[in-house]
Length: 461
Image (cartoon, rainbow, N blue to C red):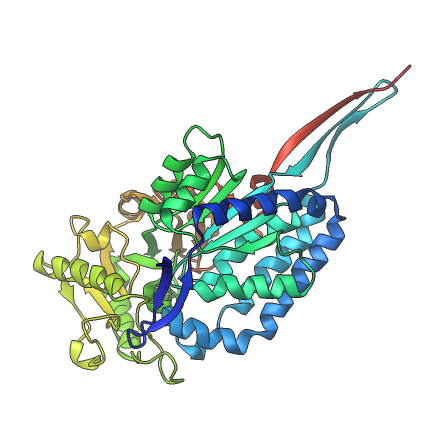
């Protein structure tokens, strides 16, 4: 019997997609094809690689109407939001624009005797393991610069979003990227780990859970394979007394609830200065009470189901535990009768929370947020840093210097001021602590997807 990966649609629990996984022998053969094709790909002019990748990106845009429906079926995002092509295109386009500069030789010196420079060369075959929550945007973060830099890429997408890899392969192949240079592969965990342990890849980029990241690191141990990991998050927001209150509430609550809270850099805990606390909470509750939970295929739906009922159950458990420990829930379940105890989960705002509660410590990755009152910057900084994770932090103030001073004290990958839940492709996307290691996008993303090679050329006299 052939082993398969299965995508159960959160809309109704039905089987939406089923695909056979590669056997270990088939997977090894796919790696061999990628390795054989990579050198010719890297030998093509950089301008040609850029043009082909961007044509592939445009081809995805032409499929967007179909993709939006597929995403709703696979992971539950409402169709009203129109898919991911805007961010997908923005990130790929920026990486294409900076490629020539980012990959340029570093000229050290040249005189009558020597020519010395540093060149950036592709790793070879890059494995990209992508998540389901923003399946196109997270994949393109690595896929586009890896291909542009001259690597061959094998994409293993999450089993919840199997059509994404197929769409990317369809688009890239149609515009002329060799099929062996970009391959979409369906692999189980054991085969993936075995390939990494066998030094099949020169670089592995993984976006997913902390547990998944540890598995990747264990598989790569002793192989000297480069690894980039974007793992969990528990991103905070801090609202200061001089903040634009309406903008802070709108942005932070959207950052907590959009995509049913299933965002890598979503806001999961909010700290508000005492003088604004009551007003902030009142406005936040009014926003959430206006959401419509329901079928993501319906235009009126603003909050779809979570991608899987087990993800929703973790959020329910964290919320129930917090309430049992003294937290106060402010959203009335009667407003969200669509909550079925399965994948359809109502949003919730909690106050009277503490850091002894899992909902303020563990990654929730769902539509729940705890809001705490703080006295000053020192207390807010201590609470924001009281986390095993460090991806982003969102600061709300009119004072840039104050935001920079606080940001310098935060253990995080990105400091936002007066915005949240956004990935700027010009900045390195990175984290610290259990959020992972490495960095994507920006010029640093190219540096992580290539290796330096030094040339020390002595001229004949």
